[in-house]
Image (tube, rainbow, N blue to C red; front, side, top):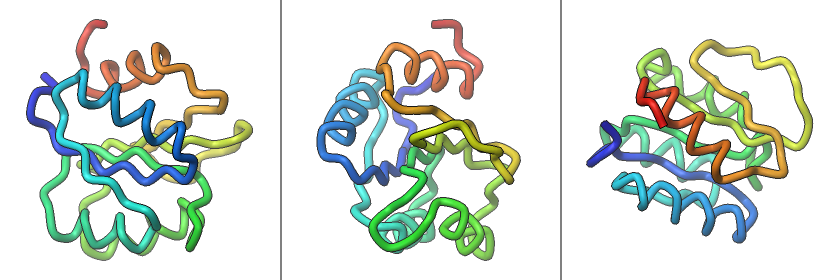
Length: 120
């Protein structure tokens, strides 16, 4: 079910970005890397992506600001989103799944499988 899905990955920390990219590649997903929130917005506006994984705080903007900006041009209800955060917080948007650091790749894989309704 994940084969060929397109994902935008916008994560600040290089080690996390590398680990998540490796996991997404194992799931046969195409990964579009974004260094900033603005880059992620451009990618999502230009490509029909199936999934978004992002950091709560990118170098240029907070996740909620980015998603608020994005909702003008992308149907967020059809874009499953994982937000990686440092501590649990209330998620102000539907269709957003929080994942708290430290990120376990096994846990992240289970979250992704659940988002796509696949048994791990």
